[in-house]
Amino acid sequence: MNPKYYTLPQEKQQAILNAGFHVFSQNTYKKSPMSEIAEAAGISKALLFHYFRNKKELYLFLWDTCARITVEEMTRSGAYEQTDLFGSMDHGMQAKLRLMRKYPDLGMFAVRAFYEKDPEVSADIQKSMGQYLNAHAAKKLQKLDPEDFIPGIDLQMMYREMYWASEGCLWEYIQRGIMDIDAMEKDFRALLEFWKTVYLRKEREGV
Amino acid sequence: MNPKYYTLPQEKQQAILNAGFHVFSQNTYKKSPMSEIAEAAGISKALLFHYFRNKKELYLFLWDTCARITVEEMTRSGAYEQTDLFGSMDHGMQAKLRLMRKYPDLGMFAVRAFYEKDPEVSADIQKSMGQYLNAHAAKKLQKLDPEDFIPGIDLQMMYREMYWASEGCLWEYIQRGIMDIDAMEKDFRALLEFWKTVYLRKEREGV
DNA sequence: ATAGCATTGACCGGTACGGTTAACGGAGAG
DNA sequence: CTCTCCGTTAACCGTACCGGTCAATGCTAT
Image 1 (tube, rainbow over the protein chains, first blue to last red):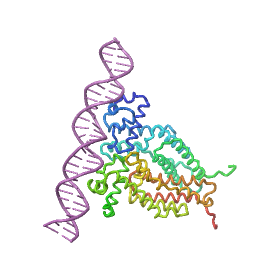
Image 2: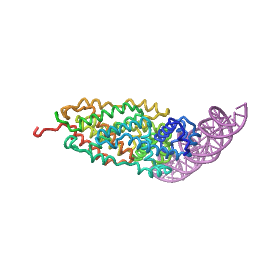
Image 3: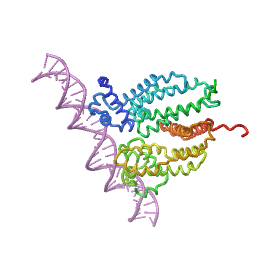
Image 4: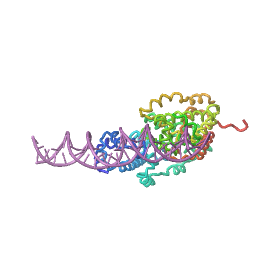
């Protein structure tokens, strides 16, 4: 790719990223036209080809950028460092929301790219996947102290359930196509509070 | 559409439906080629055009069929009649799983069709939408007896949370592209059992 | 043998695609 | 004022594909 891309003003760079994420998230690789991406980014097709040699280069660049941005935002949020379960979920979701605010179609793009079957790109995508998989869930689970939660609860199940509920909540918004991040944050906070009242062991008065 | 379609063997009809659901769920209306659908259904493009006058007719037929099938399966499952919350969720999910087993891409197709923006079909889709919306959630909620659940719990929140978690669980499978319905059923049953242990008021011994 | 129907390969006009190129226009140096 | 960059684009090119048609093929049942 042409390094001149990086000399563009930040907002232009982001516009191109978002245009790419958007178009590639709506259709398969082969059926996502460069012209549409250029138009969505507010530049001419020729200029887009000036920055990226061809469609494949743009696609793989988007994929790498997507992964890089996500990891950056996640570590920056400190979600991995929190020892408290709800605190860590809070930080994680905060990071996710910040991401969605800046790159609304990043999530959907990542999903589609991961399962893209077009032989022109699928191999490259799969090759660069290994490094991005994280096994935080298992580690997080081991650190939990059963004494903090209501007696007899299946902690692993609780964790999966919470994960699914957040994803389901997110998915509802994604489906609807309206990215009202503030509403999402409100919903998620309500979820967190609800979980606390249900899952956490009630402290006896005066303890 | 050509009524001769209904004289086809059931499996052929279903193959065409699934082919249509699949292709239209992967791309926008305009970028979903009839040839691809025909190929996926195992028939020639010309024959597909023999049964459906044009692309639009096929699309709207798929949309109507999708809605009809869903309503049929839901009422048949008796999900709407159950008074017990978990029982009704169980029946509802059973219906959904049966549907997914038979028409793997029906759900995704419905979502895309609902938010399709192509002027050639969007109007017709929206027009025939009103009748399919259901407001069961609100009704279901009113029938719940707080005495059955742990004290002080926010029942509405509980309901939303359960709904999201089921959707999130489903979504995880859809994303993965592998429609292992049996695994899904196992996961969902586990969820149900978990919810019972957490949300239901514990019966004291001997009561 | 043939009438009737399901099914298809080949075709058509039009368009949309990835990618190229020659030219435009504005800013900055002399 | 002119010349030279260089970011930017409209216009173009060859090709592939799309929605839709049609004449022809085979198959079945009388």
